[in-house]
Amino acid sequence: MDFVTRFKNALFLILVLLAQAIALAMQVRTPADSNQPDGRSVRLIRMWATATVAPFERAAHAVGYGMHHGWSDYADLRHVRQQNKDLQQQITHMRIQEAAIAEDALEGRRLQAMLHFRENYVGSTVVAQIIGASGSDQSHVLLIDKGSRDGLKADMAVITQDGIVGKLRDVEATTAHVLEINDQTSGAGVLLASTRIRAILRGSIVGRVQIGNLTSDSRIKPGEQILTSGGDQVYPRGLPVGTIESISVDPDHQPYTAIVVRPAVNLDRVEEVLIITGTQSDLTPAALQDLTTAEAQHSADVSAERLPGIHDDQIPAIGANAAAPGTPSAPVQLTIPHPLPTFHADRYTSGSTPPASGMTPGVQNAAPVSTPQSSPPQGQPHSQPSTQRPAPSHPSPKPESPK
Amino acid sequence: MVTRSYMSRREVEQQSFSLSVAIFVPVGAILLQVLLPRLIPALSILDLPLIVTLFFAISRRSPIAGTTTGATIGLLQDVLTSQPIGVNGMAKSVIGYTAASLGSRIDVDNTSTRALLTFGFSLLQSVLLYLIERRLLGIRGFHLLWLHELLRAAVNTAVAVPVFFLLDRTKHQE
Image (cartoon, rainbow over the protein chains, first blue to last red):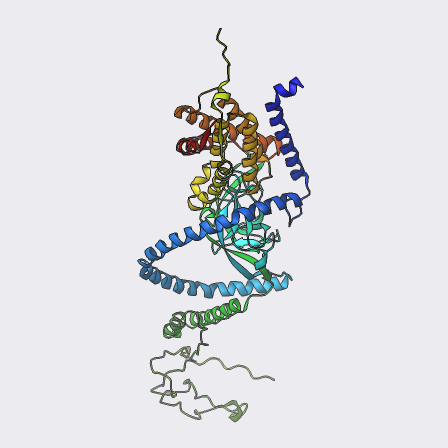
């Protein structure tokens, strides 16, 4: 009894530590379902804590958002004119690139059809705002203002226009936790864009995003783009993840390399995210319309390239289509070139050859049946160059008649 | 003959707090810890719950109270992260116990002592978290970045000194 009284402080500490160690062991040993990373009791505790903290975070976010955006909206107006001009230029460039990409997309779809591969496109998304974080630099979790009432479920992919952010972890009624890709418990299936090597992306305790399951390969170089592979069944294939920042030998896992990835999204500055709530095997109607427009424009480009004589005349028509964003381009009417009128008609002149029906086998045709028209066809400008090949200077040898 | 009764330093200077302060200051620290990094991401290096744990532990000078305060604040912090619940709880339990034990032996009202204590306990927490993550949970990728941890300790110290002065006003002398 004296022992307990004398060392009650130390015994109390040991008891508290022991209880927490047992709780830790139970959490680590609990078989984690892919949809439920925590056990039921831990999930309940986290849910209660989130429900307590979320209203404060929501209120603080609303006040901060209002103040920040009130000022930034005013400041942004000063640069709107220049931004608008830059964006118009960007649209023009993108429409030119779009035509080239359309052909690649068509080829890709043909190849996929041949391989019976079904691509998953982003079907539906929900926009959410970040209202809080975990508050620890060893845990990278965000709190968003949408939950199961908005159709969100655990393991849904969270993205921005720049790339992937993470996936949903715990989903409550009106809030949800986003596990960022740089969290130590996070992972994603990725693809190295140029080398097409598949790998597993993981976060780390210090908030770095890295690939650790590849051996040294001279083809992998810093700057290479990383895309989602779609193999993890969370992120749709082809979304930007980031670029390779550095490659070094992993001292903990020889002979593997530690490839540090710079995320495409600035994970510290995310304010709004998109949650992918559904994927589909076909493109959306809007995307299909864009693709059709791009295909039509690409066809016009190809025609213009193959007919160099009319190339210059067609540029204004294509430019006019490109200048009207959002409207489908009208089919381009290409004019068939006609020869210029001849001043002195001879037997080589176009149209001087009699029709085959009026010719008799074995009888030489002495004179042309008709002379060509001296005036150009109606509606055809004189300025159009002729695409007809020049006539030979000597008559071609007569072919032998069949026996 | 004059009879003198001897009381320990702990018994002389043991301080208490009102229930509202004991509840709302730790909860406020955790809320601020969650909100501040959203506004300024670099502030995630700061550990306000640690500062509050230290303040209550050295003020109360009771190892049991310090352990309880540390465990409660640490567990609340764990609940809001992706880590297993108990990582920060265990680390801050030890911090609370040790700080309270030291508080009964040295003058903790001195500014430089407080600064030294905060710096030292911030480093101790980093070591404890490393041991828990690496040895107890077996996370092999966890490395102790000493420069980063020294910077964290310096930032915590710089913030803790004025925060301690502010919280001193909430004390009730017994």
